Length: 339
Image (cartoon, rainbow, N blue to C red; front, side):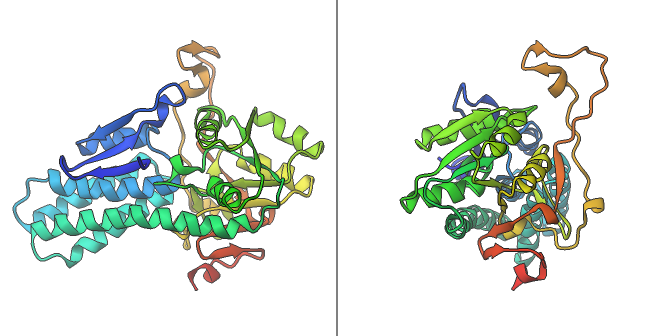
C-alpha cells in the first residue's frame, strides 16, 4: 500500500509504522486525531511529503470526528485540530501546508456535510498529487545521473518519506527505470537510523544496489573517489538555506571540498518563500534518543544532550534543487520556482 492512505469504511487514516522497520512491516490505523498526532510525533509517519498528506488527512479525520451540528462550530473544531497537528513537527513546512490547504478548501462549503466531503476530497487530491509530483521530479533528476553513478544519500527521502515513489530516492528509481545502473551509499543517519532502518530496507525491497555506511564514513568515501553525486531530500527550503535531517550540512561541506555535485530533491510544497534560516524553529528531540539505542544504554543518564532533528545547509553548498517544475541552479531565486 501507500505509505499513508485513507480508509473509507471507517473514516480513518492508515499508515506504515516506520518505527518498526526493518524488523516488522506493519500497517496501523489512526481512528482519532490524538493517535495520528502521536504517530507524527513518534515518527511512525515521517518525511516532508508524507507529512503533508498526514496534515491533510488529519483535517479530514477531524471533520468526521467532530459532533458539531453547524458550520461555525465545525470550522472552529477544524482550526483546533489544525493547531494540534502543526505543533507535532514545527520544522517540516509540508505538514502546515497540508493542513492549511484543506482548511482553505473547506471555506467553499455550504453545510457541515459539504465541509466533510470537501476536506476528504482535498486530502485525497494532495496524496494523489504527491505521487505524480515525485515522478515528475524523478524524471528531471534522472537526467543528472550518469550510467554507473554511485549516489550518497542521507536519512530517508524515498517512497516511505512520501505517499509513494520518493524524492531523492525517486530520482534514483527514475534513473534505473531509464536503464541506468545506479548504486547507493546510505548513511545510517544517527540517532534514529532512518538510513539504515528505512532507506536500506526499501532499496533492498526494490532490488536497488545499496551499501550501508556510518555517517562519519562519507568523507573517506568521497576522498577515495567512490561517490559521484550526493542527493538528499528537504523538510523546508527558505530563501537562504535547506533544512534537512541533522548531518546534511556536514555532507554538503565534504561534497564541496571534493568537488562532488550536491543536489536537493524536494517538491515545491517544501519551499518556504517567506522564511530565512533565522526564522525557522528547529525541532529538538528527546535526549533519550542519544543516551539509549532501543533498550540499550549508551551514555550516562545525567549527561547533557544536544539533539536537534535538523540542520541548515547554506545555498552556496548546493549544486541544484530538483523539483517537479525542473532543476534550479545557483544563484537560487525562489521567485523562479513560482513561474
